[in-house]
Length: 177
Image 1: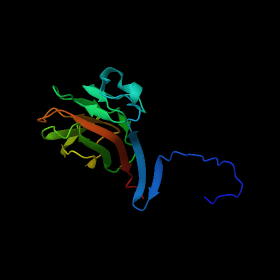
Image 2: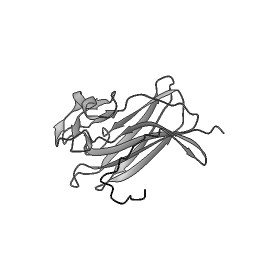
Image 3: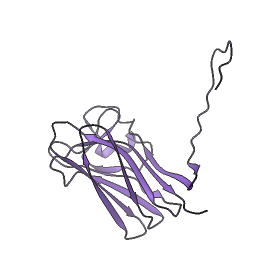
């Protein structure tokens, strides 16, 4: 905006937009989590995860608050994170974007498996990500096979079981014209 001479303050209105028009179709924001509620370090929060998330319905196993991010797993055991079920209103593919890094750079190889499943269909898909020492953004796209989906993150098949995750964003593009 342009500044106004002698203004003492400005009032800014923030509006959340769930549907944004793009050249190839509408993009629907299905789920967003930034884990900013994880405001404690090295604190186990598995059974109270909903107290630390934007939306309720998150659950899992061996989950830890790490000051603004979520840790999946510990040095002695793997971890699991389940998103709440979310509606898939459009007809296009669903894309998951998230940031992740090893909990400690001294950890051995860390893999994070991400599964998608639909409540009203037998369809399941997955991908496996090699997680590095620095924050990196990862993408995963899967086909729509029902009207409600959920995601499942796990470190179960990893040599080392600890990974930090942040900024999970799930979107869907409509192919309708």
